[in-house]
Image (cartoon, rainbow, N blue to C red):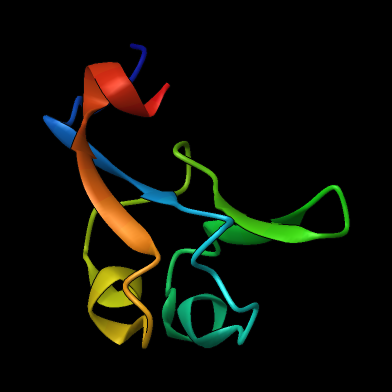
Amino acid sequence: MAEKKKEYKWSYVIDPVKCMNCATCEVECRDDAIYIKDYEAYAINEENCTRCAKCYTACPVEAIQRVPVSKAS
């Protein structure tokens, strides 16, 4: 029997303009959802993200924003 994929009402995105590449979000992420995209900016893999908000609360410059799922894609 196939496992049903969990659906979320929100997601998190990283604003590359605000992000200072300090890696705090990556260190705090327990789900291995934060990665460096195209060797220059951090991004969040929505497949791995469990919406725990650890990255969101850890970011010192508020570069991570919580957005409705329809806007995150």
